[in-house]
Image (cartoon, rainbow, N blue to C red; front, side, top):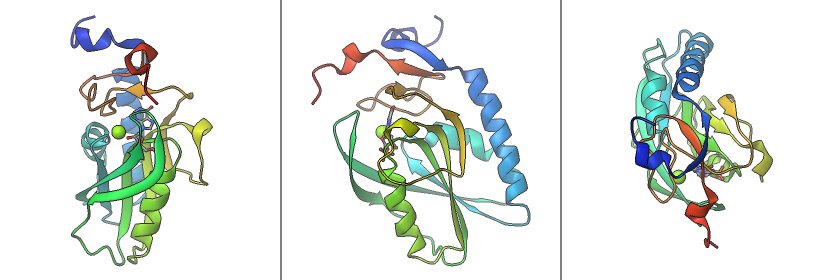
Length: 187
Ligand code: IMP
Ligand code: MG
């Protein structure tokens, strides 16, 4: 393999290629542009996992949008969240009456976004929608549905295109399943 060959050695397989991602992101940008016609949404990227997806997605949206970021951490091991969510970087913007679009890398248990949605709703947003790159429905623990998603994936731990394991692999251009030997011994 060409670029990032050493990182690719830690993958069991590639699940979604950069070409498939680019196509899906373009299509999603088109849908969001249509759905929010006449509006100027606040597009909130969730650090750090959504950064790569976010930067590609906003360039496919033809609207006078506003960019904002939040950082949340959910306690747990490196591959499983506990559902206890802490806001590390909050919005400074007043969201009262605004249309919010939360951009996330993956919905797994759903706990992080469930918490975040309630939190933002309590501040009087006009609407709140979620756009996620990946959806892993098999692991859902709360009733949370993303309004937009690019790919539904099986119950496997994936990295790349922003997603990490222990802060690594975010810079892989494709999305791959991490070899279990990398995280064996965890828990
Ligand atoms: P939640 O379980 O839906 O609350 O997901 C919380 C966070 O866990 C996501 O935003 C990701 O940062 C992380 N996460 C869940 N599944 C994966 C995965 O397969 N690879 C990398 N990160 C993941
Ligand atoms: Mg993460």
